[in-house]
Length: 356
Image (tube, rainbow, N blue to C red; front, side, top):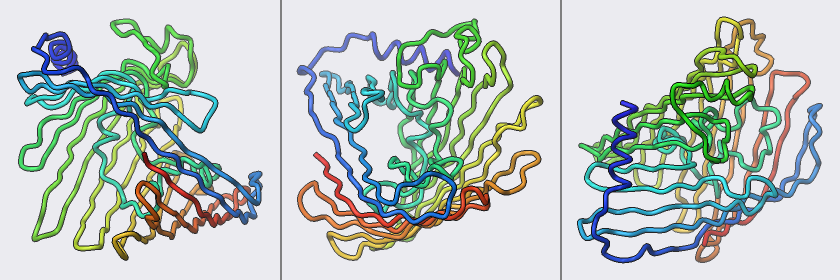
């Protein structure tokens, strides 16, 4: 399967279709800023007031051949950090065969995953602001832990009766920001001398979009696994993640959730075995305002676990469009940890999301 996918990608890229027009380039992105008041009895060093930012400038290119083949690129420039200025960047080819992406991007399993509904200016479980991530094991119950943004090949099949198959190959996550890496018979992660790395990461999944009795239905099953190196020069074993997602929408209501499981135990390492369940409801109060709530439960299932790292996260809030491309967000986020050293923390936040 790997050779077939790589071969298909190479044929698509190096074929020479007649060009209809030059590649058109657009610039867009977002700027999300939140102010939080924090109340915590945790030993974690939280500030009482916190101003958080998350922003990207996104460059997109698109061209279409005379035969109808679409091709293009995307480059994402981080706009609120001094490190990793460019993370995702890739080229793509799209046609009757589906879509192939080559470069630094999240895996196709990550992008095909159906999740709990969004009602804030961002996905409540994403938490790019890193508010409650200091006390939660996985702040993102998504497939971005193994392959991350490392160079890869993503494939998305055409939809048949609403069903799409996705597949990804990542030679190594040694450079998770997408710097070029090699592949082949040699084990790259061992040669690199980098510990805590993943090699030969494979992701795949099924995604469904359709209607049932007038209700919009989305569902997914996705998985990602790779060879893990706990210490430089060794291969500790294979780690695997899998996730199930379901979303139902009727009128102004959307209800849904996803369950994420990681199986990282090996013969020499108990690993991090976690079950994370996220459920949520969103309601479109008006053409401008959406409100909702979500519940996230994280359970530590690794061998010998005491349960002290189990965490419950509750998010209540909403978002209101105040103009073209401008959204006001407000939220109450509560984290309850079974670990006495982490304690309980609440975050009351308000902010502005601009999309351009």
